Length: 149
Image 1: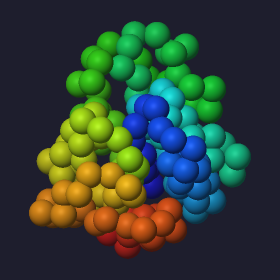
Image 2: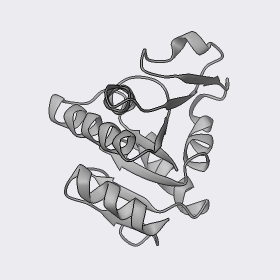
Image 3: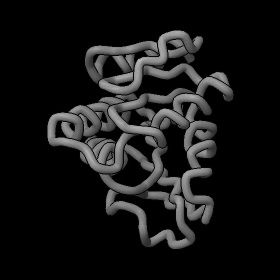
């Protein structure tokens, strides 16, 4: 399946490690990583997926596909800025949210609108949303979304 990995574009090293582990686990289990295509959580998840031989898709905010991080296989330029967050959430069968701020929160909201199960790692606590599960580890997050789809 396709799994959207969303999160902060600038993150501390521990969060980057978590995102890389998520990307690696998803690829090892045969899933494609969808993300916003830029840095931080997005780049780390793509790097982890590529290290494990996986495929990555970046849905970019700008008009230039060359803005994608170097681990994106398929770059989709949108010219939509943050409005592209809806497309990131919609193009995954499930979502894993890691860290992040307002942009990540909007992607969690869109995941709920599009009825995508969402695992949260060190992100906003939105437990009142149906389909959202706070998780303690990358393994727990991947297991949750696999069971939920």
